[in-house]
Length: 286
Image (cartoon, rainbow, N blue to C red):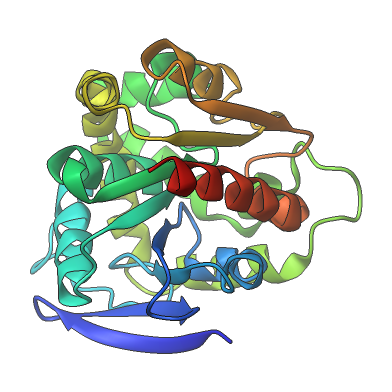
């Protein structure tokens, strides 16, 4: 059974979902843009018998507090700090990470700063290699290098309901994606003031790409068990990003699934079963 909680982290109310027994190994699920922990609603039941599952909403996302920009700077570094404090507040000392989309640069920051706490990493379209950046990123890099107001304004289309729906359904077979997820995300994104916060994060994403070499160094040095389960039809983070893990982690396990960016919408049971087999194998090896 999933339960729903809120905890104060440095003055910010962080919402999270919890399932499973507290005496089981821990896995922390980190969501992506433009979503929140509800994206794990079908995965959590697959994992809850074997893990203590914790799935928070980032500040400014989902049901967590969305602080004003005057008091909170929307950067990936700041969100990572809140997530690290959240993990400490829950007294989680050893845990696996599931990272997706925005959750990848946040999760890899956490992992490289706390390598002794990481039992494994599951990357689902969570990219840390330039090879994994699809064609659309060329325009974003132009924005990062020449951040005019006009270019910033052009990214408001990222929050449009049609854009959000397309993120969910592109690369999937017809009639397999429930509208619940993208309609809820559209509601979250349409809240007053949220657009400027999200535009701040789109611009700050450049810091994640700059950190790719650091994330890769962490992988080479610490060799965490890593499972990459990728929607191979994702146009944002293409399959080369999954395959690149092999360069730094020869023992990593790579699976490419016939679906899109939000792979859990169509393949939650399959991904969950792959995770259970992978994590059990590495738990036994330890």
